[in-house]
Length: 249
Image 1 (cartoon, rainbow, N blue to C red):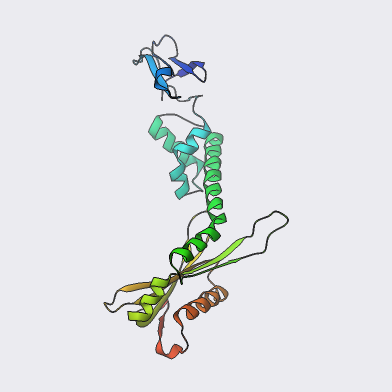
Image 2: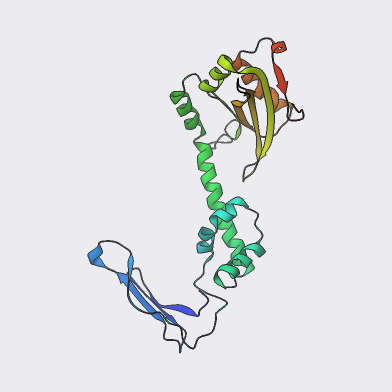
């Protein structure tokens, strides 16, 4: 990168690249049948640049390549400014890209990220079934809106999870102190994560259950605590101490 290199011949089985005259840099690669693969093998190469200037623009650099190259960075911040993408490319490859290319690369990356998340959401029922199969006695509850139109998919709203070993451990040895807390979920699909923990005999924290909900309001907490009370068989709340995130021990 950073040199005025162009492809003089670009075919499925062979490619030849040269640098702008009078620079003698060149490379030729083709498929080697003896290897039995579709990989290109470098046959000839003169790897020395002479009498050529630095190229700040490269026509071979595509938005598709940029989206794959910076996928993880964009995953952590899907709203990464195009200015930041352009600056990163300039620092790493000494190449200038346009605002349009940076924006297009971000759109392609976000589309691939969102697509993978959507596929995982569609498998949520399989996930719950597998949990119930491998941890018999566990509670997995899903709440969703009805099917949206003919051939449409239901919209996910909430998920409650309480594994049998965790609720059994709470009943067998934990102190009757329960902590409730919630936090924001970061990513493409926002929401809230509600958690419940208890204090074990060694004054350590024992996780009991958690839920993913659309927001943290009375309605969602009521829905969450309803399943929690059934799992822990709480009939008389006077014997329990509940601590919220607004209280300190």
